[in-house]
Length: 130
Image 1 (cartoon, rainbow, N blue to C red):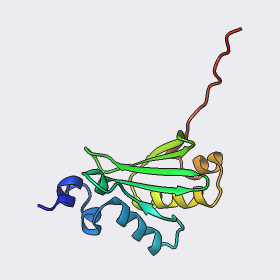
Image 2: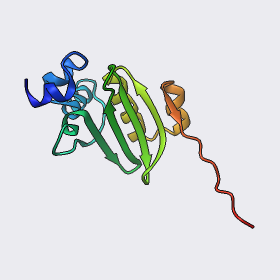
Image 3: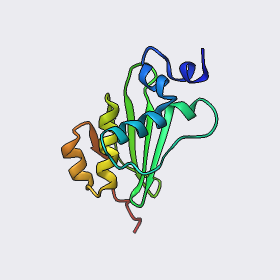
C-alpha cells in the first residue's frame, strides 16, 4: 500500500488517492471548474502532506483537512490566525467554491448564506476590568 493510500484511506477517499492527496485534488477540481484558488499548498512531510491543504490570499488563509471516520472536508477561514468561519462539506467542489468565493471578496455573511454548511464564528468582546 502506498503512503498516500495508507494516509487517506482508499475506502473514504479513493479520488484523492488517485490524485496524490488533498492539495493536488483540490487544485485539479479548481482547474476543471475554472475557480481561482491561487496557490494550493500542503505540508512537505508526514501524513498531513496528503490530508491537509492550505490556500493563502490577501484576505487570509483557507485551511482544509479530512475527516478520518467518515468522508468530509473540514474548512477553516482564518484571518490573522483567528478562525472567522468554519464548516464541513462532503463534496470537494463545495470546498473549492468556498475558497474561490472567499478569494473573490465575499463577506462572511455572504459565504454563510451561500454555503449553509459554513458558520461564522461569533466574537465576544473581552470584558475590561474597571
